[in-house]
Length: 119
Image (cartoon, rainbow, N blue to C red; front, side, top):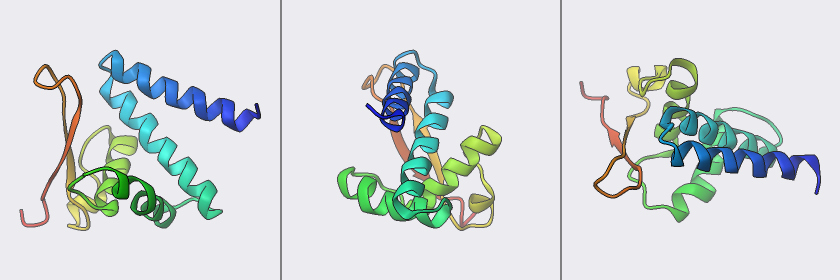
């Protein structure tokens, strides 16, 4: 197995371990970083455009999420840069904040969008 595959598998296992242990913020950080990495590899360069393209092409087509690729990129920026749901994009009305919830109700994390563009 090549080093990239080993690192990607280790990243996925770390995401699963964080989730299982209720370490939601580190889980989200690893998840958004992983999306950024695979998106940049597919596009040949890193950046918000590559991230949004990958999210539209793979994630939003296979998962019933009520948010846009821009919402998710803004969420990525908020989580990775400030440990919060708020980002420059959400403050400027360019993306909605992602709201995360987890607990006993379903035992699975849920994701939703909070529209801050009209506030």
